[in-house]
Figure 1 (cartoon, rainbow, N blue to C red):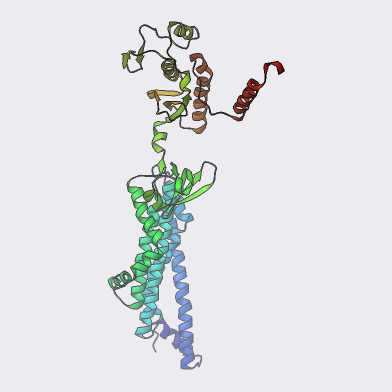
Figure 2 (figure 1 turned 60 degrees about the vertical axis):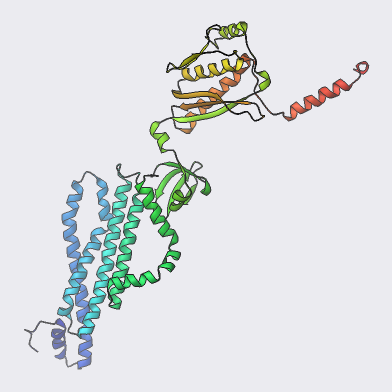
Length: 425
């Protein structure tokens, strides 16, 4: 064989081995081994070369970017996967040059090479998507978006396409034929991947409708979740509860069961107070001028008895046409106190009566606090109600309270005292 014939390096290697007096079978075997090693070395060197070129070109460009987090593409070894992907194409085209084997064997080797290319393409896409996920989670523009859900959806689509391509190559069938075959077993697939499919659909709904974002405070009572959303992925939403525990809520549960999101409250920076006082009905009475003058002296009321009106900061007013009671004066005092309180928002506020149910007359205070933080809200709420508890006696009103053990003991003692004859007292 002439050295000028370089259509196959395997033939050239075998020609060199023949000079050592080896048998044909051994020469063929060693030629295949040597050329396999040579192909591996060439592909490895080519991979290093491609990786070096890519890094030499890309690394300076990444350093020029304002966002230093773009270096995540290097940390995730995205360009290493790209170099290996390019190496797969090189190996595919070098096979006929390194080996002089049967057409069927060459075809099988090329099939394995194509599968390797598909796998490396998936590795490249996976690392790229994970890098984009990292950038999205640390970006001010997308930090509250369910970036992980988007990435997982894209990865699942890529995995399915890759699986279909690999199976179609191995069995020599059209990808559409494989997809049709999958359709026959779709019921089993739906059963096995039920949570993933439900999570996929729910994740799309959550994302499109902007129902929840990372950082939102949500309450999902069926799953004992009440806290801040720290992560949204395809199958679950991770919630850090107020007591620092972690709850994992299925994504589809947010759509099917519903949940409470306080994002709007945080955006407006006000939070509602809706509590009530229980007034003993027996303490409600009509009052006269002397009663109002007494309130004037204590700076608890500034209106006039003969010209008493209901009013608010928006100018809505009407004359008081019914009899004046201590409860109506107390309600006016509550409103004036809330208006003057620096921690209460005056845009929407009302003091109203609720339906009484035998446990006193509920007087509800419906107001908004100029803070959404837990501690300020409770401090302002406590400040308001503690003051009202202290001044309610000045209006000759009594808070309704169920009898306690001491009350019952006093009643028993009073009854026993009445039963004792006067002579023996």
